[in-house]
Length: 219
Image (cartoon, rainbow, N blue to C red; front, side, top):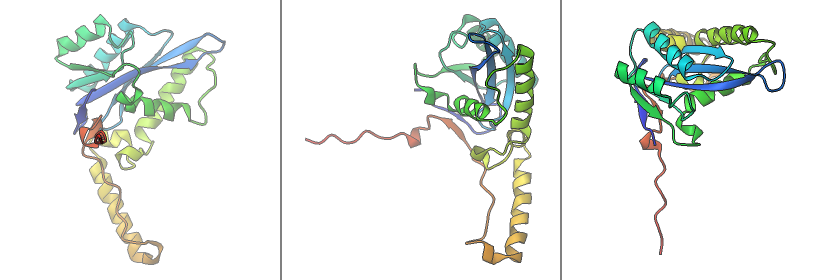
């Protein structure tokens, strides 16, 4: 069981690939997404005609170079591209720890699973994409929205970009001032003094503190 924790951006990245339907039956576009688990910021993505170890290695390399900080760990499931020699060698060369989910355990990669669900539940997510360029244009626009406008419940209703680039605490302070002023004007509207949501101080994959202990055996 992988047990990973991030207490700041750029410590742990996770990545996965999901399929999006093309214009005809049997045509699929493969969307690669790399997420920073602390901020939920999508640090890298691409849409391709097929799953490819070479393209995965290239995307991870480009993402880390653009990020400017080498993560401590990169986590993925056990797909062919994820366990490929190309990706493994890149991470070894960069000094990055490689982590993998247990076979057939989707909860070991919850951040990508949740992000893919958010993507496919968007009202304008096409049932089928007209072409590869259509898919790329849609995902480019969606990820721009997701990173910079989407208020994520897992990070105190901040945007991933705000948490990733360090402006969330300032935003939270501004929210607190607004709530104090609102309470002073209309205390009857509140059951108690309102406070903005906390920003989590750690993001876990399989937090051992939350693992259920087995029930004691009885004779």
